[in-house]
Length: 86
Image 1: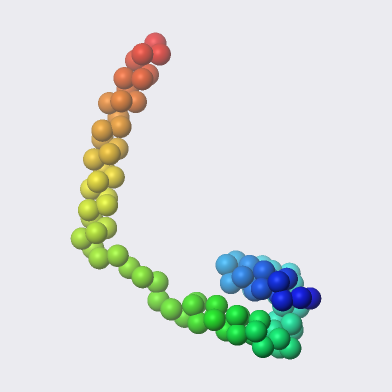
Image 2 (image 1 turned 90 degrees about the horizontal axis):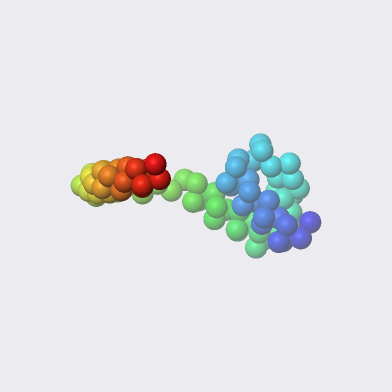
């Protein structure tokens, strides 16, 4: 296994979970022998431990309100299109 293959498998395992990736064991074996790939895998492992960012509540509410307004504006236009088709 070369570095490109190992990193693709490592990324897939990071995204989907190691249990779902059939060649994860081979990629781990490659990482034992390849310092660069081992560091790559260690970097992804650190990312997994990093807490997910959260938006401030005010921003979330503003986005939801704007989405509601856009949806309400869309309803009359959709109704008008349906009426035109009849």
